[in-house]
Amino acid sequence: MKKYGKAITTTALLLSVIGSGVARADEPAAAAAAAPPVPAAEPIKYTGPSIFEVLDGSGITATGYAEVSWEHLSGTGAFSSFTADRVFDARHDSFTVNQAAITIAMQPKEGFGALVNLTAGQDAEIIKSYPNTGGSDFDVTQAFVQYATGPLTVMGGKFVTLAGAEVINPTTDSNFSRSILFGYAIPFTHTGLRGTYAFSDQVSLTLGVNNGWDQLSDANKDKTVEFGLTLTPIKAFTFVVDGYLGKEPLGIVNNVATAAEGQRYVVDVVATWAVNDKFTIMANYDNGQQKDDTFGAAKDKYQWNGAAIYFNYALTDQWSASLRGEYFNDKDGYRTGVLDALSGDGQKWKEATLTLAYAPSKHFVLRIEGRYDKSNIDGAFIKDTNSTTGALDVTDNQSSIALEGMYKF
Image (spheres, rainbow, N blue to C red):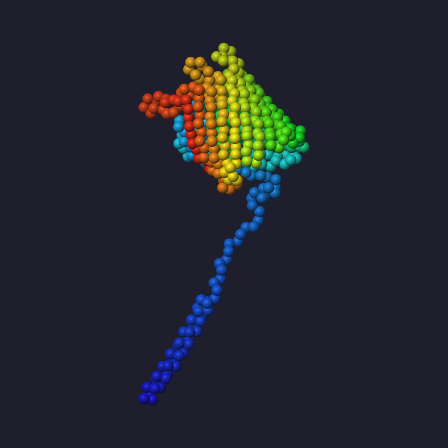
């Protein structure tokens, strides 16, 4: 019995030793489990200035935008003359990258400066200046140097036109589609010299000389002069009158200027009235003429004129609406190529546009738009083309709906 008792005692001691060893081995794990978790190291955040702040600190600004859209036209986007019946939105049932642009500028109030504005996308092909080599949806829309001293600023290079209530940059326009006047009454850009003198905060005068309408290189040996007068008698009202005069080719066909040419002029007037913080009214009028100095020409001059009115209303901080109505008289068919078969007169073209915009942030804008166009000439717009015979289905009207998204910085 003693023999077995001794064995039992020895076994108990061994189990006790082993148990205490296991317990000690588990102590670090238990302690670790009981200890609070160590938080993961946070990534190092950059707290220095942004690239835009660095540029601003150097006197350089960088701005830009991207614009995409979907649009539906009831027609093909062309007149019966095969001239496009819209400026930028003449694509039938299409998703489109309209524009992606960036502007880098250094324009001090005193001394030398410069600006470069680059545009890519479908619209770039349309605004290109002569000579247009084609084949690329890219355009150097503006590139000029300037010198400012006191009230005088002089610039030389390529710059946008003085004329018109609307511009190439969609972020400053109140509608998605451009007006008839923007596309058919005035030029887009010029290359030359321009000087602006501010007599006061209420009056400024602009004078310049350039190669002509949308010409990077001059299509002839003659120059075009420009003038602009801006009056701001009160803060809420601005009145601008400007114009261009110079000998121009009657047209540029397949990137070749026609031999026929003559004096061309346009006078453009824009009045803007901010009725209150929410409501703005703007009106635009254009009158133009192109002469043909060719001996024995069928017509010695071609004339056009038109007017547009805009009603812009801020519904809330994020929602706004714009209604545009306009009338364009292409008296001799020079700007659109549409002529009445009996009288030989050009068309009288009207349009109305309603645009609703939503801006959830200062950087993003979403717009939906409906538009209706009507001509006094039956058959002005091509509605469809017969795929078998090639015969044109024409009408006197066209409607459209579009959805646009813009991001700007």
